[in-house]
Image (tube, rainbow, N blue to C red):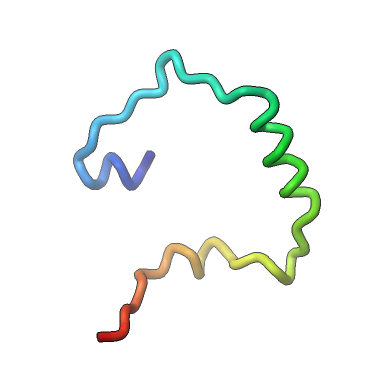
Length: 52
């Protein structure tokens, strides 16, 4: 949402609900993750560098 706001885009979460089955999938994936396989948030937030 922060990125959308920075880009000047309108957002709305009114009337939007995530189904329980989707929440369960995410929770299961989160449990299976190994810390060493994840990218730290600080690293993710760095700008992309593209080769030209």
